[in-house]
Length: 367
Ligand SMILES: Cc1ncc(COP(=O)(O)O)c(C=O)c1O
Image (tube, rainbow, N blue to C red; front, side, top):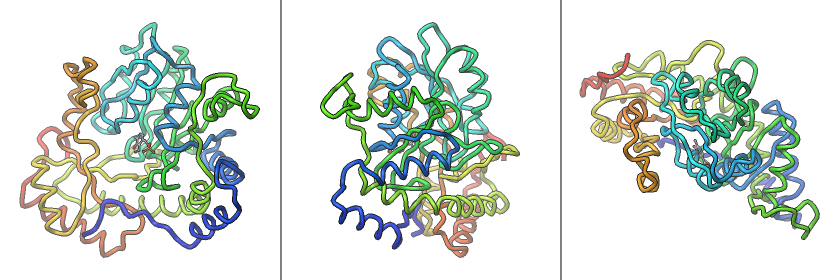
């Protein structure tokens, strides 16, 4: 079976992890600082703050943006749960805006109508490795005096022009094992705002700058040096791995038939955390791909506003037609950099074969 993800660990990771373990500095230390500096450089911002996960990076970004009870934060329902649960952690209320059918990202034309006097931040998601329309969102955020917090959990190295995802407002990355780079568990907050970076560091560390002197009630959202060591070995491989993902995606764009493939505007660098197509009769499609040895993933089967905790909060009756349709039609196929050319051929033959058998041309979208 060709799996939907295949995290790669090499000798560099082993050596760095072992040297961190042997050094005795196991908690947040020099390796974390080094990873922060290198990651900030890579994204093109002056500050990066490592965290224990992408979820804690989002939570920390919201806290550092002074989002709290009574506030509203605009985000999308077509995303991983943490984009919205992190807003609830602060006591604020997520306000959902539907996504755009072409990009799978927030529909910028609907943002202004969702802004109220309580809105504090816009939290777009750069889903599957394709950046949201960050220049347009940054313009709205600036004009309306709102924070911009990008959920960049899936978009390490993605860019619009020569500016990287994570460099507009505050970026929040995940280093979960299936991501374009990993630390095991881990995350990173990126920003150009020194005051925000300072608040984030404070809140990450129990609200203390000086040991055992607590200025505010903070959290333990730290990464440790063992996980940072994995990241230090992974980061130099990221550009090459992203290039391989893009090369495989270009083959799929060219050769897949009978399914809706993801389009990208000129000037946008999509890093294909996922290569996500749209089909109808999805369950049969997935089953038949499995019979042909191709693993798939559904990201995501249920929009956030229809998840149990959100239904309990009264969101269940809200309607986001594009998100709901996408949840029924999307399926991701393997695009990870360790795929061999033969495996890429197998995926293409399998998708085209199954699409032809099932006649899976979606009625709701272009082909
Ligand atoms: C879009 C999105 N947001 C947030 C997260 C949360 O990241 P983590 O799993 O590292 O907490 C993820 C990763 O799973 C994600 O894909």
